[in-house]
Image (tube, rainbow, N blue to C red; front, side, top):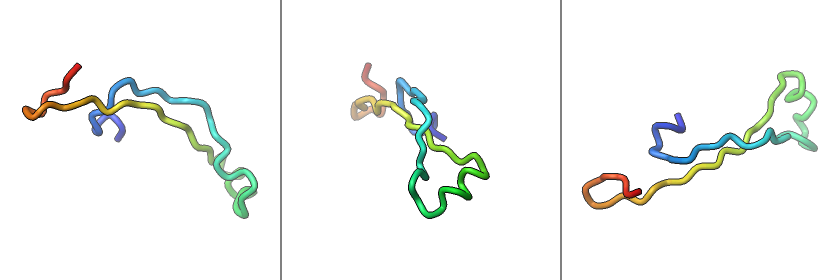
Length: 53
């Protein structure tokens, strides 16, 4: 899904407790629900739709 967005330099950052303190936190823990931050860059594109390094 991410690779189809024409992003470069894709990095998966650390795990994030997305439900900490939320009303559904207990249920989320039962399912092992976590979130991950994703870092990436969208390169500049010239009018010919070619990626500019």
